[in-house]
Amino acid sequence: MSTEKHIRVRKAKRKDINSIIQVLKSTKLGKEVWAGNEKWMKKALEGCLDLTNYVLLVAERDRMIIGFIDCCVYPSFWEGANQGIINHLFVHSAFQGSGAGTMLVKAIIERADAERLGELHVSTERENAKARRLYAKHGFTEERLLLERVRI
Image (cartoon, rainbow, N blue to C red; front, side, top):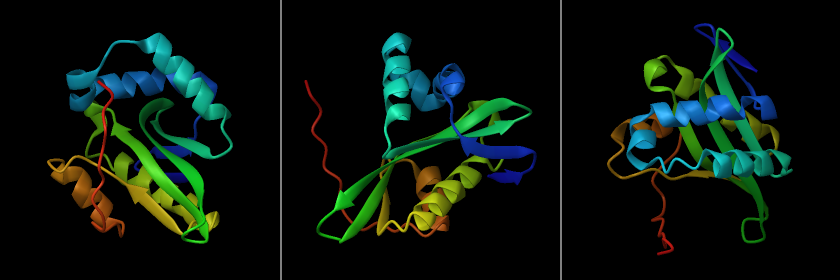
């Protein structure tokens, strides 16, 4: 798909699941909230990869997965077109600042444009200024408030 600074972005495969989990575990957020249930996560990722309305892209450098981004596509009768939502974007802590995050965002936007999605949404923590700058650089604007209910 995309190549920059020896980084390649491609669609994820089942064989990538363990590496994707390692990327997540390497990050500050992954270390703070990691629940340690790798068996469940592997099963969930396998299920996601089987969905037709789901895309998971990985960034790799020297055949090592260093980041990933995923997106779900859903129909919107209100907008009159399919919409997409970016669920996760993580870059291995050792490769943050390498351009991998930018390449992943660009690649998911290219896919959204190719599929003629009406809108592409993303959410991030208010405190995550780095992510907010990255998304703003690629045309995302703060439009709405996302409310969340966590099961207790």
